[in-house]
Length: 542
Image 1 (spheres, rainbow, N blue to C red):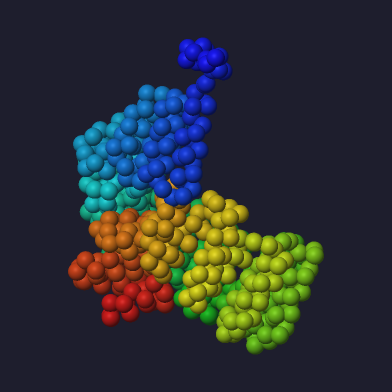
Image 2: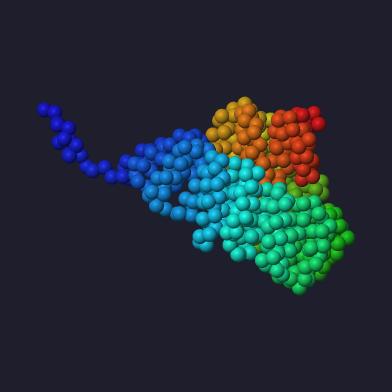
């Protein structure tokens, strides 16, 4: 005898919201792991509805925004607001959605509400929306200007410095100058304001004026370590490495400032000043201080005094510095053309049971690098093979070998190593991005590349390298204007020669050759030997 529907319905255990949400949540997670953001957003929204779960609604909103699925993002956001949660994050998401739709009035209303709320972190949310959520830098700059007009930016130095920095990253000189002028008016005499002014002048191409601003700072302020480092960094950006080193030399010194000074002097190739610094430190190195001896070894390397560097490294008596000293000593031996000794030193470290695992692993990676420099491809591969035998499926070894395969144009083997990393750690953003970029750049498997890069974007939506990969795969898919938007967004976050080269290539494909050449020139200034730059110039015949 069959059961009646009513009786059967009453007889089963009650199904709670968590159970109802389980299946779509799993579907969403599987879609996310496959890089299918549209499917993931739909599944998570279904899960949020089934489970009445604000956390799932938030996740659905963020994934839909990342997928640029405005309709589903709006549905998820409405549910998220209904179920409760972080109201600041909801307002930021609503502003982002409005920007994506081109409704700048609504976005402005939400962002002004955030600024006027006075809540902790509200202005940071606004900077984040403008920096990452806007459709393009022009839209972000336009809205930033209107927010300044509205007068709701809190009277906090950090907030104004952040908005000034955003204007500079957006390459909006007039807007940056406006912010700086307002900061000077509100916070007179604050040294960090002078740093912002110098930075703004530098980015506007007014190098001499920027130097005057830095030079006018009260020298007593440089005794404050934080300010001294910031001033030195600004001189560094101006290309005044000598001035940066002189700034760092003021006030109390420690191994960090000594190391930075040495690096700056090496970059400007001021061997006279670097030698003086080396001699100054050498006098204080009679005691067996591991950190100081390691630093002296590095400075001796800068000066190409390799035998002295070797002596310093071998004189590191113990402590955690002992292991990097052994690695550097092997490198110096190689520079001294004592290859067999270098390789034996690395073999000894690889076999040293007392050494930390990361030092032993790095010894295999360094050996592979030295073999590569010796044009010994078989030796390089043998070093990786022995390293992976000692540390099976170690992600750093696999990653280094994958990059080696890519340089050899053996994309199949590079992919295999990247995928081994992902088997052990499916959420490795470095491997997801590297594999996705490799497939986009070196194959025609663009859809697969996009799914991998989308998985990385989900984990780190603000990562400039991942945004660059995303823009690049969009270009390879023929979406040139979308690609340009993403690549320019990446470049506002990180001035990188590869990103600049990608922008140049896309602009060239769009017929905007003069603008493209400007970006290629920018890439040359950053790194004339960059591989992406060389490939792009070869491709366009420049």
